[in-house]
Image (tube, rainbow, N blue to C red; front, side):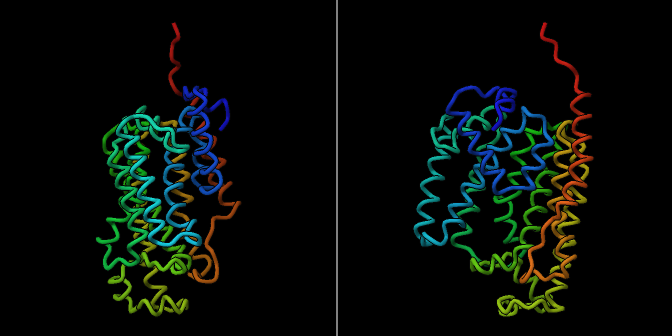
Length: 310
């Protein structure tokens, strides 16, 4: 975390600065698209976005990245212990956890509802015990906590001009998560999970056994196209909400929307070969999105009213 960002955000105590720095490290290491988009925000907003990402990523590491060393029971215990500590810290308004300190500070500054973090941790616990979803409605319980609430948490930091910014952020968060599911069908199978709703797969004559065989059939292509259109529809519905954010925040979310929802474009480009190739956004496309977005972000910052110090 740069001194400039921390100073601009009014973060001065050593413990807090160290916690925000750790959150930024996790964001830059694991969330390359999110990290790139975050750089489009004014410096004083960036640390708080890193705090939200650091919290989410650390919980996800307990669930997934430690999978090779911990049993499901051990992961459940580790997640439960950390979750209880973080929720208590949020309720008490103070934390000495290396991630929790920045999170608590962010929540207090922006009055973010604690129930969003409770919902997120519930979904992380579901990842340990639930590996299939019978319907889209069932999946939405998981996606609300794993993705929609992240959009809801972000809005106070970004600066809402209207309460209508919240449902739009929720939809965009869901779109991001569904795009992930489409790209990661093969990787999720390795973890024993299927996130595509089973009843929808059956409607396209795709069975679990067909997925496990890892062959892209015409039926699976049709199911993936259906889910891709759902991502694009959610993105279209969320788009007007970006204009309901503070002008200096819009370029960040526009870029994140184009790059992250754009994952489904990359799935199409690899002809849906999700089992043998990883759909990823090229550096060329990242730059094509980021450069004009950076220009818009700078223009919005320059246009902000100057605050008198008299």
